[in-house]
Image (cartoon, rainbow, N blue to C red):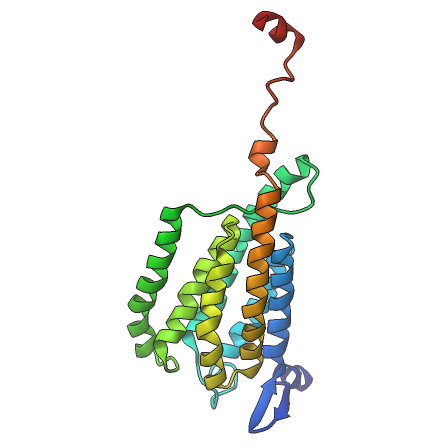
Length: 241
């Protein structure tokens, strides 16, 4: 089984260190999931889960054989959170796709704008959650600046939940996560994930406009599936005449 251990720890040497291929593969699955999410495809969720579980082994470095690498508890915790919320999103999109199938659409959901109370709540939770869990992450020995690790954790939770709900604004939450997450990952030596986050920063802006345009073009399935009052049964038409 030594070959399996070697494959698990496969690292490409780079200047001043090494690039763990598990980190690369995990981010490739993450990118594929993001592309599927932009197109509103249900398969985006299981693909993302594979990437999340792979990256979990990366960020819990001291447990999985990388004692000289920084532990990012927020990054590790968010992989567990991603997996949990992704299962919820997978179920929700499956249900929605069933409704969309009745209207002849090949996408899982129709995007929608969050209400203003929801938007305000998301901002409050992002800031308040970061403040609340930063001391916990610091106690557990997370990499400094710990608040940045906490910010990426809370923001990722909100963004993933927003995607499951079909809110267009979830893309903007990802932008806020990337702004903080990219410098944090570079400083901690997770270069593959940092470069991927940098790419995501541009990708998420594109995704926002794609979903906003889709929301303007399409109507929610519940509206489409409402009965047309003009298409009444003959007896009902006679009764109303």
